[in-house]
Amino acid sequence: EAYYSLRRQLATVSTQVDDSEAMLGGAEELNRLERAVADLETEMSQEGFWDDNAAATATLREITRKKDTLGRLSRWRDVLSDSEIALEIAADALDDGLGEEESALLEESTQALDGLKADLERWRLELLLSGPYDAEGGRVTVIAGAGGTDAQDWAEMLVRMYTRFGEQRGFSVRSVEVSDGDEAGIRSATLEVSSEEKAEVAEEAEEAK
Image (cartoon, rainbow, N blue to C red):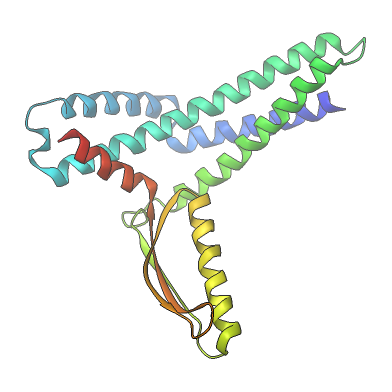
């Protein structure tokens, strides 16, 4: 059952990966991305590149974004290839019954495909949020309002929940303002949320100067 389940799952996820690559423009577009990364890295190595810090940071951000896309596609293909190999190994043992090694291999591949499917869903969401301003940060303000200590406790819990939610999804979350409650909790708080990529780019820009 595990063998046939994995085979069905692999067929479904393979189609989703093919569709995702097609959305990016197929093999020709991926080759163009690789050439663009090489050209940008050559540009970075030129003398005076960091003279215009804003332009240099934008270039570094573009390289990071393109490399992330290429790396992601490469990881997807690696998972699909590993799963195909696992199926081939398990198929040879089907007649005699799957042993512990084959069963563990199928389970590992199933988990890897589950992770790939989740990453595909994240990628499609990111693709929807790829407009000129979608990568910018934002602020979240929580206000307890009326309700006394209970409301202030709940406001503090919300801030922790929003912070954890953002960090788990790769965002940098920092507290900008906090007003403590009368006895416990908070009256209000403001969080600043930005992508980790922006933070990393800024750090790399400083190190490269």
